[in-house]
Length: 68
Image (tube, rainbow, N blue to C red):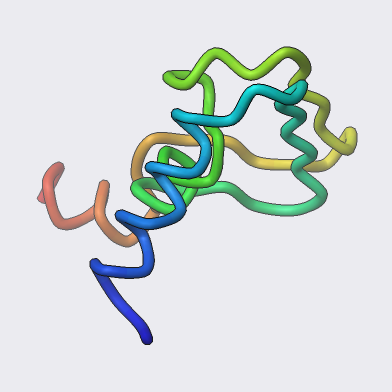
């Protein structure tokens, strides 16, 4: 499976989890991908990021499209 159904299943799993939720960002976290993969909106117990990691709600290409 791919696309929206897979994201919805992952979202449901995070929302219903009763174990500690940890988010580790090593490189880049953009847009809906970050949001669905236990981003800040889901109140994980711990979010850690590598010093060079990038976290944004929209990717650079998307922002260029909006700002132009």
